[in-house]
Amino acid sequence: MAQTRDWVTPRLFGSPWFEKPILHYWTAAIGFGLHLPAEWAARFPSAIAAIAAAVSIGWLGSRFEQTGKFCPWSPAILAPLFFSTSVAAIGFVRAATPDMLFAASITLAMASATIVLQAAGALRRTAMPAPANRPSGYAAVPCFGLFVGLGVLAKGPAAIILAGGAIALWASATRHWSAAFRLLHPYSIACFCIVAFPWYIICAHRNPDFIRIFLFQHNFERYVTPVFQHRQPFWFFIPITLLAVLPWTAFLIPAARDGLHMWRRKAWHDSPLFFCACWAFFPILFFSFSESKLPAYVLPGVPALALVMSVSAARSIERQTASSPVVLLGLTWVGLAVAGLVWLRRLPQGAALEIRPEIIASALLAFAGGTCITFLASERQRAAIWISLALVSVLVEAAGMAILPKLDPYYSARSSGTVLQSDRRPDRLFVYDLPRAWEWGLDFYLGRELREWSPADHEGALILTTPRGFGDLKNAGYFRGNLDEQYEGVLLVPIPARPHTPN
Image (cartoon, rainbow, N blue to C red; front, side, top):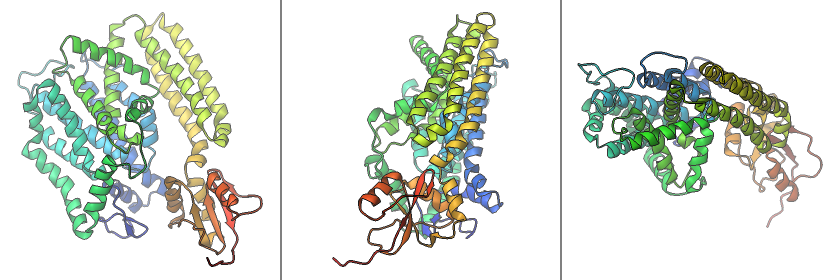
């Protein structure tokens, strides 16, 4: 788009590409147009979106305060801390995909909805007493439509389903339908239409196949059929969600406890946390019925989970109830150590050897840190909790800075593509049995489309493949000898020219 100035039709090496809508391409193309390095430009939208989501839930956390005063364990701090250091955020903020943009759009839309519902009296504002002249919340009404529209531009009609479904779930449970319908104010609908519709209309006008490919094939068929081969069991998103909020998963325990207590006291009808729980739960529920399941589908609910966990954690600390927060932080430390060691066993052999010292050192530091904090907590519980939260965050980020670069060659096409850029031989370079992410990554770094090699091709070629693909080529007799070139994640296999033998 930055090169052609065609800002309507997404293209992949010249051919229209309608798997996802336009928002990520627009924002990334701005970076390319400003001549940012390609790595920065492609990932810039995800980084900005993650910051927006973190700030949004931090602001919501300030409205959900119990005491109305700022403190180190305030939800305004804990919510963005939990979110930005979670596995989900660390993974998707670095990805050149629309997932984080989509999650941030839903987060901003639900934050706007919270303001509207609080102004309508359907949600209590726990930070401070409601003012006598309650504001109307109309300023947030158009914002709700605007951000849902951005979500539709980021990933399609799922934005309407997730935002609308979560609000409908909450309204069904609380019977606050009149407050929920305030979000369908003409201002909100107008903003949504102004943001979302123009690109869809223009793109459909220029590309007659757009509606069929995008809406029916990549949305409807993806949900109701396993056409994209992403089948998983119904309960798939339960462990995925627990992994997504690591290393803070233990803080789901007080959140569940507070939820049960709220239910018994029948105090959930106007609870903003119950609203956030519906926001977090609905993506899991909706996509559990899908025939295609990917880990990214739970990402829109992760900011809400971080917010709920932060409020429950702040309440536990304020109550100073025995050693409950300390126990949770101890579980967090142990969970970090165990997760690191389990992850080490599941890595490719070369990657495991590469990062084993860092993983073992991190695990030992986690155990040691947890032990020291537990002893400190017997004297000064709040100080121990705050120090522990800070140390866990620092450990997560430091481990990421030391470990992720070493894993890069095994999970990214960057190093292979960089080497091949300076290699003048691959005039006939093909791929064979490569995962789609690797294939597209190599296309990106080489600046051209690599075609799939076919056994019907009898000319000499260089083939980029996986160890499994290399085994298939060897067993079929296409390659004899020793392989002398390997770019960490992929193998470069020379295939000699062969005489054509007619059937």
